[in-house]
Image (tube, rainbow, N blue to C red; front, side):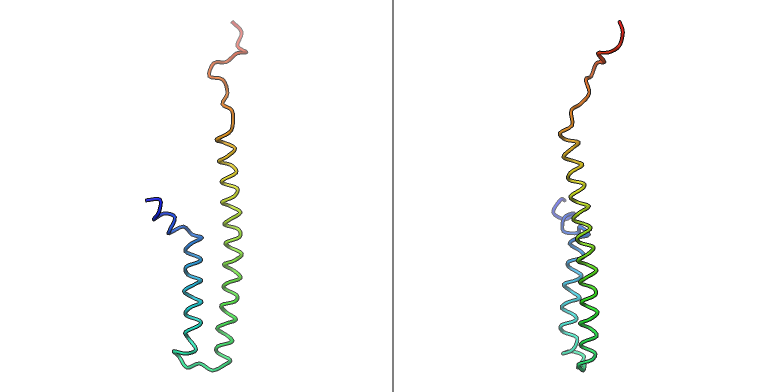
Length: 89
């Protein structure tokens, strides 16, 4: 179950979709018999897409780092005593 969840993690989906878009951009000029200006437009669009995905992935990694740091702090935190020691008798 964890393998499936990690396979469909948002960061991996972003990388997969970017790779598919890159492949489609590389194949489009050949398949559709596009001229140079159309090919340049596709490449420019892909460059913009890659920039957005790179920024998103950077933010996602920062989010994961914050979560890991929070989890580490929770795991290493000392628990309060189970019986109060400052209650008057």
